[in-house]
Image 1 (cartoon, rainbow, N blue to C red):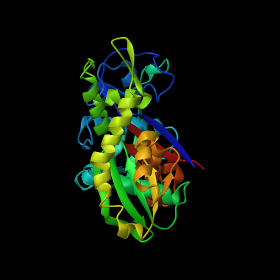
Image 2 (cartoon, rainbow, N blue to C red):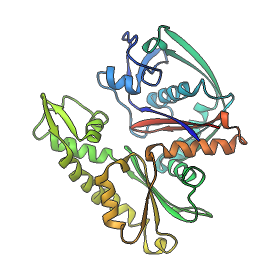
Image 3 (cartoon, helix red, strand yellow):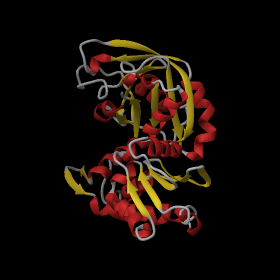
Image 4 (cartoon, helix red, strand yellow):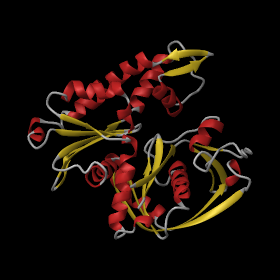
Length: 338
């Protein structure tokens, strides 16, 4: 039903010759933006000196605009123009950035890129006409995907989404969402920073930022001073601290006795749900009173919901509907297949 492409949201300015360093466009994203060349995603991870991204960046920020171009470039050959694009933001920034994002997206985009990273040719360009744009809260995108996507969720349910930059929650009822249950707070980066603080007591981290440490956080180990450092115990401890200090206090205002009378079904989504140690924290607190549901590929759920929303806005034009999730750790772009 969906064609999904995902890449790291890290970027870096680069004028280096990177011919044939990648197997395809997804792994060889080198974009020309405002008179400068930038590498994005896996290419930035492999070839960059210190790739970066702002947390919850604005549509006026360089990284946001560059990642939009990279994502649109990836779907250029598989969509029919003009496009309908849906994207979103955390609830905390949604109202601030909604109009700015619409203004940036709704136009004809001329995207220049360097194809020599994965083929024999060099500079190329594509033109993409974005005719319709909708910007919705990210957690609403997750809810749309749950109700209209593979899950086909029915009735009332809670949605808890944990990403790198933000954690979000909402109670979704058949009549609509309950505004007072929409929470937006710190994401997994909070735990990664705690891990970095712990490691810095005994190791030199070579100016690594939280985005670069996130890869080690996922793998559960890191090479420091040519030694393999096991991070699994630290990761378990910081995830528990993150849950107890950040998530649990916020959820007390959401998963209340009154709301549990409406439903006890809780969907867990977002990339943070890949960590079993974090999932265990949810089980320990809510396992006896709530029915915890896990979605397949939780990190792409918002993007799928955006694509389904675009399908509605476009009047059913599947080949023109795009879902664009500019995440703090990964950018996910979804289109609909027949």
